[in-house]
Image (cartoon, rainbow, N blue to C red; front, side, top):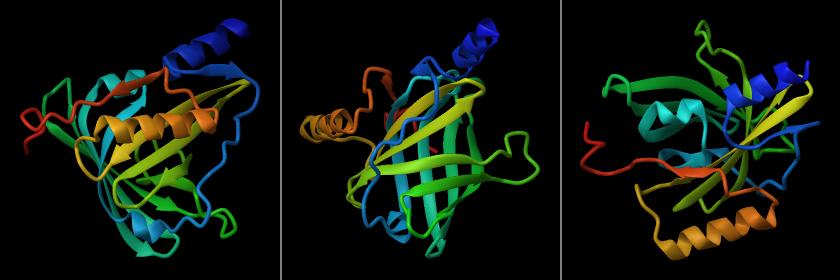
Length: 187
């Protein structure tokens, strides 16, 4: 059984995998989903097998209601070197916890399982830090995502965001940079 858990952890992520239940880091207070509308560029994320096959990741959020947004993930596949997209909906399942979002992938697709996506911090204009934890039998894997409204952040802002991660007990050690090079990401 331990070998199966280790295999699940290794296949899910090369980031943090641990035994037990998912941690519950502090999320942003007074979060408003509709203020996230627009295009966000994924700058850094927890290293994973899935992440290796994608570059130039952009997330386009469009408000539908106060508790629901469309969520389009556009990226270039490193296998085919072509633009691909994945459509989902973001919802706020609990009114008293608006920063604890749920991603609902397009129904009928192979990956149509819902997964949590928590807003750790955002100013709605420059940065967005997201957190997700996936339970795997007796273990779990964590993912952290740093996004920006622009394809780059200056070093001072990155340091501020890393400090915030540290305050919330979220590791930055497993974060990898996502290619947002203008030359590589032209449509």
